[in-house]
Image (cartoon, rainbow, N blue to C red):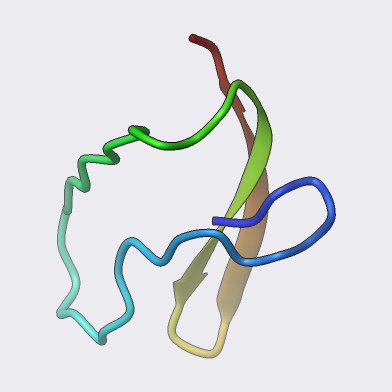
Length: 56
């Protein structure tokens, strides 16, 4: 996860996993309200960055 300035603030998963469905629970304790970005990668062919709004 990245803040609006592009600084990495948390890594949720950083390992290679076999194909399938996965669920990750994010504990936002210690994070302030605001906009954050997360990046999803699948192999070398797919990568996307999405916006997340955290409200307290």
